Image (cartoon, rainbow, N blue to C red; front, side, top):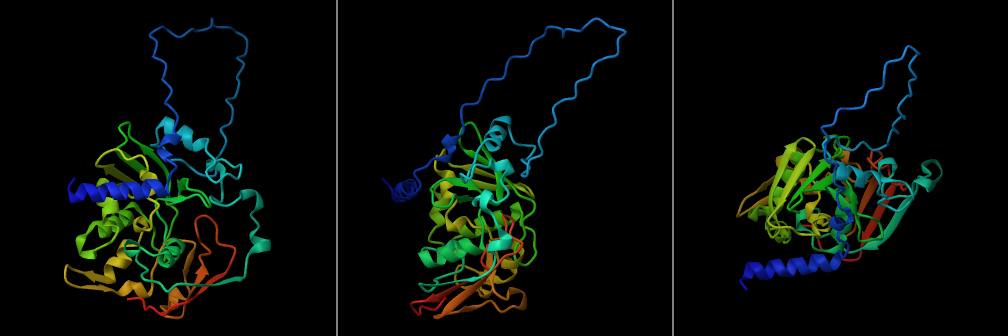
Length: 327
């Protein structure tokens, strides 16, 4: 077995072990559509009596709008799934990942979390390999999909829906059109493609590069809010793979203007003020004073405009146990 196949096998084993739930298997068998008939429709004889008109049943207005391009099979799935287990179907779930029945922003908002943790090694999603940096990145950035809290199941995030081709190789993700980065830029499919290209670019030397190259053939922005990912071969835990930190989305315009990376050198100006779409952001970002003190602490503030509802807490403070400086 050559080195590439060994690496691929090991990566598959790691991913499969960490995510036992195979989301692709959640979709039931597609029902057959009855064959059309050539018989003429039955027409009632005309009558002089006033016709009786029965109004069609009014279709329920759902909170979440599914994309019109979604196939009937996958539309049925998303209309009938309760991802976070709060008894509210996804299409009517206002606060995905939280119990809609107990949401109380007025009575529970405010306060500060204070904790201790290890120093950060990076704020760049494609460089994350440690728990502390992963925890931070998952607070300030979002991915196409995310893990249901306290489970290994997968639910939507920046993507409001997806569908998989019959051969299991093509995943089409339909993104939300109401998500903004902390600096006010709108998040689109092009930001995901940019973030993915950073991951696979050898100049960035990402330790997670093989998570993409071992499984993904191409990534394409079909339009501003549609991403098509084609795999090298069918891979059942692919949705679980997409929850890894290395697939989190960065703002293309902001990052590209604030970093210079070549095969021999790298400058990351945006590391001082990382920007994402997540529920938390660095304090005082708008003043250019991101509150990260290497060797001491970092301080986040709630993103009050978060697309799934702001966090209850106002601030998130972590003091470091060690003094390893962020490079």
